[in-house]
Length: 290
Image 1 (cartoon, helix red, strand yellow):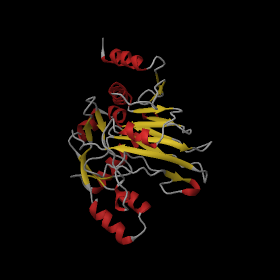
Image 2: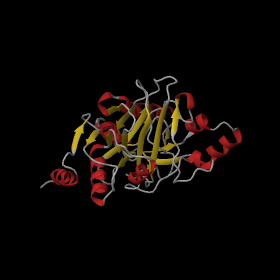
Image 3: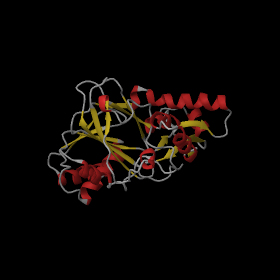
Image 4: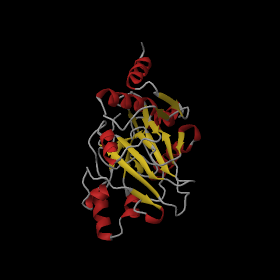
């Protein structure tokens, strides 16, 4: 039996109703028939990991899980990590802080395309987002594949960017979330820039990933500023292409798990002042490498 057949056989041993429904050609699958409210057995953990490395982002509906179960699912991939700004305000890695937008906002209202925390030396491995309150219309999250973005590049561009590195900084995030100037300056000094390869290799599936994003990637090492800006603009625009994107409509109880190495996301800010609440858990990762 091949790996896919083995995976499906193991899945059916966990649930007779198990079903994987691919949502787009290049990424994303809705997982049906898996009970996430019970024990996270080693077999279930292996299945979820295998599905994620295959599909890049997984969607679940009507999960019925709470914060503690979501955190348990996160530990399938690694220990939890608190946001770098929230840590400065006393939040611990294990703390769970809901993200509210609309009239009770304590978070971004919409986001540029980004992978989470690439300004860290060791960005998150996996992000897990659960909807608690969802607008009737709007408030979707879009996901884009760095694997298909890389694969769609011409060979000339691949040859040009293989071996390059880029600097990632949290400048825009910091200005959006830190009001006190002294605190802002201190934060930006602490996270003054980290270099990651422009193209990385996935440690579990071996695929090449385009690893630059609009939110945090600021310059390409060793290139003159005009050339760096032009190349970064071209590369980040690959994530806007519809063939690289899957869009998810949130409902209360919905869950999305995505591979933060290979997937970027974008919060769509089209729901006005309607309440929206999400709970995020992220798992620690390692340093991206070629």
